[in-house]
Length: 313
Image 1 (tube, rainbow, N blue to C red):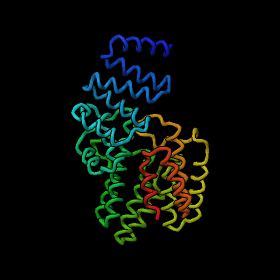
Image 2 (tube, helix red, strand yellow; image 1 turned 180 degrees about the horizontal axis):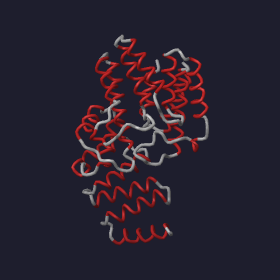
Image 3 (cartoon, rainbow, N blue to C red; image 1 turned 45 degrees about the vertical axis):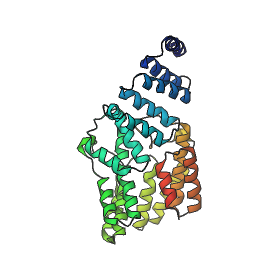
Image 4 (tube, rainbow, N blue to C red; image 1 turned 45 degrees about the horizontal axis):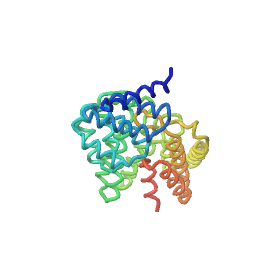
C-alpha cells in the first residue's frame, strides 16, 4: 500500500479538473487518515459537497469531520437542515441531525424525528439509542426544573422504551438502565411518592450493566446511598475516581457516538467528566465543578458535563 502516492495522484486529478466530488472525498479521507490533518480534510470534503450536493453520504462524512474539527453544533446543524431533502435519503446522515438537536437542546425536535422516522440498523447505529435516551432524560430535567414533575417522570419512563422504528432490542448487558432507573426514582421523589422512588432505586442497584467503569457507576452509587448501602456506594465512587485517573489510552470509549473513533481530547474530557461525577457523588462540589469545567474545555460537546455543571449550586 502506498497511500502517499495515491494522494499525489488524486491531487493531480483535482488540479486538472476540480469538478469530481469523488476525488475531493478521497483526498479528504486521506488527509484525515494518512496526514492526520483535520482542517485540510474538512476543506476537501467541503469541496466534495460543493461538487455534488445531492449525495447524502458526503454530508454525513463532512459532519463527522466537522465534529472532529470542533466546528460549532449550530453551524453543522444549519448546513444539514439547509440540505434536508438530500440528508433525508440516508439514515446515518439523519442521525447527525438527531444528535445535533440533542446537543443544541432542541429536545422536542429530536424526539419528534426519533418518533416518526424508521431508522434501519447500520454500523455505528448504537449511538442513536444514546441520543434517544439523552433527549428524553434532558427534556425531563428541563421539565422538572420548570416544576412539571409529572411530565418529567413521563419523559424518564419513555427513556426505558425501545421503539420498533429504531430497530434496537433490549441490551444484553442492560445498557443505561441503572441511570434511567435513577431518573425515574428522582421523578417519583419530586412527586412525593417515596415508596415508588425506593423501588426504582433498588432496581438501579440491581440493574444488569456493563462491567467497565463508566458514568453508570455514579448512578449505581447514588442508588446505593438511597437504599442505605453507604459503604458500597463509597467503594464504587473510589473505584470510579481511580479509573478516571488512569492513562486515557486505557479508557473504554463508552461515550463514543455513532461508532466513530475518539480523539485524545475527547478521551481526556471523558475522564475528567467521570472524575467530576465521582466527586459529585462524594459531595465534593468544588472538585466536581473543576472537573466538569476541564471536561468542557477539552470537549465542548459533552452535554452531560455542561448539565451537571449547571446543577451544582
